[in-house]
Structure formats: structure tokens, C-alpha cells
Length: 397
Image (cartoon, rainbow, N blue to C red; front, side):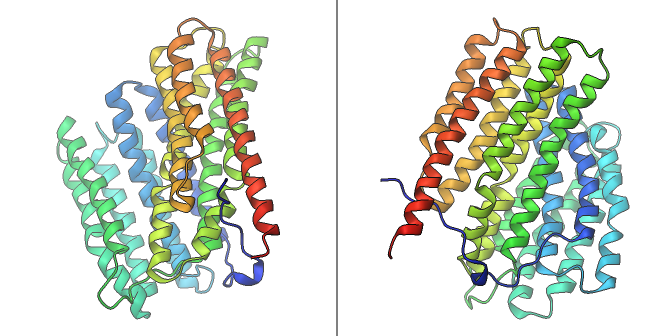
């Protein structure tokens, strides 16, 4: 029997819903540029060490964006002008961080780390100021803040080193970020520590970042095609590259946003904070990284559609599908404690397809094959979801 996925509650069951503000959308524009910079960084060094450094810096960017998302759900940014001005003050250093990202491991480490530290500490301070009046949110913030404040400081320390030492210290920063999130969601003896989270707003913010990442695929493919003569082969490569982005969109937006929002709505207090952390801050990171990795593949595909793919591109394509689908599997497991077999199958089949056929078939054929597998997978998943949705709706209980 298929276990039904959580159903979206009726509007009356929601708390007062808030949605993304114009201020948050304006701030997101800086992270649009940061995602472009990250994709360029990954594309420039398709080695295992390069991918590792890219994933690390991708986590740092994702963590910084997530701090503003937690801030925006804890505080209504449209209520007070002073709050809006405080958030606007973070835009210039955030842009400086994004500008220095491509050379963060070499010549602009201090600029990257210094701007990053300033923005993260600023966001942390705004959050503390906004939630201090509520004893439960104050307690949650106090459990989160010490390690969250130490992490960006250590990032600056790491920038004083070179080479592998810098990478090692920055990896510790990522560990500290995860530790801060775990401490911020731990139960307390009094049981009164809880983040203030509005489910509709929180789910919408993360959906918007998925859109930002998918937009990078379109930009990478379109910019590459614009810089080349628009031949038939380039056109086919462009269409094929974008088709995967379209299937990614369908795979995520068919039901993931409303299911995760519903899962967040059903829990209260400290449990809601932990669910938000696991489903969104942790759970959405592999989904976003998978899309960004695919943007690298899309760029290379459009420029050389009728050539065989390099081994590095094949590995990145496999990694893109693994991260994206793996992230969805992780969220599914957290919500219903079940893994869709077709999703597991498509990860294995993509790896096998790239390993066996990658050296013999043109890039456009390889990527089209992956698009077809993803399309079939999503059709099966969606059919199962709709069946569960219908069964739950007609269940007299």
C-alpha cells in the first residue's frame, strides 16, 4: 500500500500567512549574482578538489542566505522602517562577498571572509534584536548565536592562511554552522525555546531560491548560445540543456513546496524549528547544489553539443542528478519515512548511462537520455502522489 504524502491544510488551518517581501526579493538579487559566481567557479576547475572547494563555498553562500530567511520569518520586515534600513545596510557587503567569491581561495580571501563576517554578524544581531522580547525565541536565539557568531570570525582567521590550510579552516566553519543549527533546535529543560516560523513564508522563500538556481541554468545556456553562431547544432544543444531544467522545475514544483509547507504547519513550538532546519536549511541545500552543478553541464553542452563529453562533465552531470534527486529523497524520508524507488533508480541509471555511453555518444544524446529518465521518473512519482492525494481526500477518517 502506498503511504499518502501529507496533505495541504485548508486555508483556515494556517496561521496568518506572510509572503516574501519586496525587501527580501531585492536582497535575493545579490544572491542571484552569487549563484552565477559559484557556477563560474565550479566550471573553471572541474577536478575533485575543485568540486570540493566549490561545494564548500556553495554551503557558505547558502548558509548566509538562509540566515536572512530565518530572519524574515521571525520578524515581519514590512512592519518597521528601521528594520528595513538595517537589512538594506547588508546589501553592499553581501555584493562585495559575491564579487570576491571566484578568487576567495587565492587572492581575495580576506575580502570574501571580511564581507561575509560583517553580513552574518549583522544578520545575527538584527535577528536577536527582533526576537529578544519573546522569552521562547530569545532562548532559541541564545542557544544558536554563540557558535553562529564564532563561525564567520573563524572564516577570517582561515583567510590568513594559504592553500589547503585555508580550505581546512573554512571546512571547520561549515561544521560550526551545522553545529549552531543543531544547538539552536535542541530541546531545553524548560521546553520553552522555539523559533518563530511562518510556514507559508518559509516554504515560499526556499522555492524562490530554487527558481534562482534554475534561472542560472537558463542564463548559462543562453549566454553560451549568444556567444556562438546560432547553428542547428547549437540550437539543439540549447533546447536539450533547457529541457532538463524544465524537468527539474516540474519535479520540484509539482508538489514539493506544498507538501513541505504542510509538514511544517502540522508541528508547533521547538518541533517546528527542527522541521524547518531539516527540511529546508539542510534539506534544500543538495537540491540547489544539484541545479547549480547542472548549470555547468548546460554551459558546456551548448558550446559543444555534437562532441563526446569529457569525463569531468559526465561526473558533474551524474553529481547534479544525484544531489538534486537525493535532496528530494531526503525530504521525502523526513516526511513519510519512505523512499520512492523510481527516484533511487534514476540516480543509479544516470551514473550507469554516463559511465557506459558517455565516451561513445554525443553530449546532446547523453543529456537527452538523462532528461528522458527524469521525465519518466517524475511521471511515476506524480501519479503515485495524486493517487495518495485522492485516497486521503476520500478517506472518511
